[in-house]
Image (cartoon, rainbow over the protein chains, first blue to last red):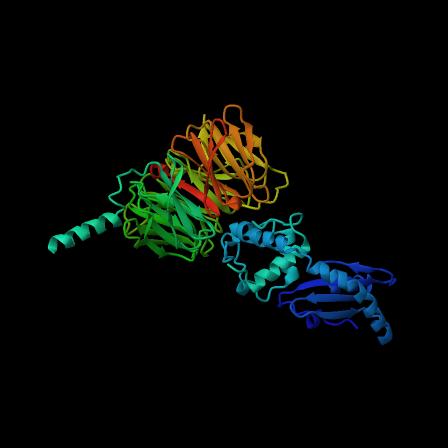
Length: 178
Length: 390
């Protein structure tokens, strides 16, 4: 079965999502930050994929390929993949406090040169929790990563990792302390 | 008893006025914006000291200032739409009004009686009485498309006029304020895609808007407005891939010397050199990164350039005679702004991440002094009071 991604993944809640998948030959885990499970499954690259959502409460959601496997196999694969999820989880929270401070400083002062120091907007649109409510994290992360060439938004690829971008967006959705 | 009371009052009044502080002029004074704390430092350039501080000025993350013609009052334009009138002699806030939702800059009229503010939201220009800060005129920037447009590049020009650009609509407007009750607006349409800033030449004749959405600049000859807006440097950078711009360049304070103008390119790590007689490209000077400000020393011999994130730790100095970068300085992360002393022997530099304003000798490039200022950005000296467009 292919579960509806929206059902499992509350996009509107700011969280850090990490995708861990197990390749079709069941030999190696694929760690793909910022890749949606739906894409992986559609491309038939994986047998089973797990999206780990980390926040205050941690939850796991599991996705299965349409060519269904038995319940027993599912459980086996879940245990198999969990072994790889733990290091990934650490990675998800792997931004050091120092790096987080640097990122917030950058957000306020450099992103702030267009979006405003308090994120209320300027030449660029506001990035307040209200303004970002209901907006998909992947969409927002893509916008930051690739930029919008015809507008004034530059791509941050090369300066920020996907993980850092997702973390910053989650902070913005919560509202950054002034 | 009556005498005692009089004496007490006299003593008190002396204490309150700073013990009868000696008179001083304002010609060597200025202010530095503290962008994160919504405050300013009042400074003087003769002994390079901080004289005072004014707090409670709102969101100054993008702020600029103009001066009354007597140099005593600074009008500060904050991002949150705040317009503050500051007495720099006493370091006090005289009056503050929230005049819009999101503003970007302002200008003072030729006669010093009007202060205009350009707003992102609601898009337009509002004009205030310089003495009372009362609203005297509201000019919504409704473009040809019928929508309100963000306003950028607001400057004052001779004839009691303000000129500004409409970012979204791609228009340049002239507002003649001779009759405050009925401003006369002249509009120039289809001037180019997304003008992001504007400037006027020091003689007040040419208004130039930088374009983000296309190559080139829009030029308006204010002595011959019937000729309309002309695009210049349209072939600049054709067919080249633009580099990402992490901070929009500013055009204020550009350098004009020896018949040449120097301005920051957009999306290219170059300073453009333009012949001010023909308005054609005369050369390009490769620089460290995306330039933000290219500011001419008052004598026009040097142009000082700072840069956008992530390479904003650097200053480069261009020699106007040879069109070469002659010096590269690395003051530290977040070099936000530079301001020259009135005759240019020193330059003051804001180094945001070091919480410092540094003073350099412009001939020897020696660092002379460093003042502690919290997250400094714009530096504005009173010498601006007597310059068109500043």
